[in-house]
Length: 134
Image (cartoon, rainbow, N blue to C red):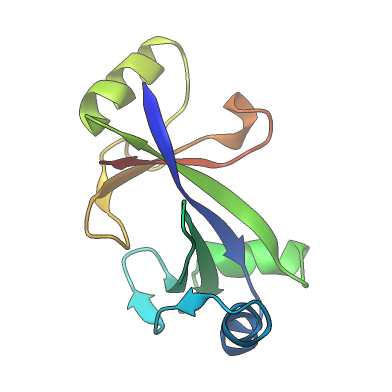
């Protein structure tokens, strides 16, 4: 069902400093910040040869990332994202297996402009999983 790893998302308390660490210290190609109001985050993508790192920073008072940072003030890994060929089919198979899809169960458009869903971390060994249609 799942394809390649699309990205690992890291919540960060200081987006500019985190982007500078990847760009200046590690020599990575780093995107400009992109606000994602539907998800309550601002994102920066760090491009690697085989995947991406997504740096997440809260956008607005109701950002789910703010709640994460309240519990983890230094930041940390927030989720992993895997690609799937057909997100609706993947959702239906997973729900049929008793896995929980967060939100209303319908895909939203993610930071890459493609449909995404999130799966409950309690169903995946404590890891929040994002699925993105390839």
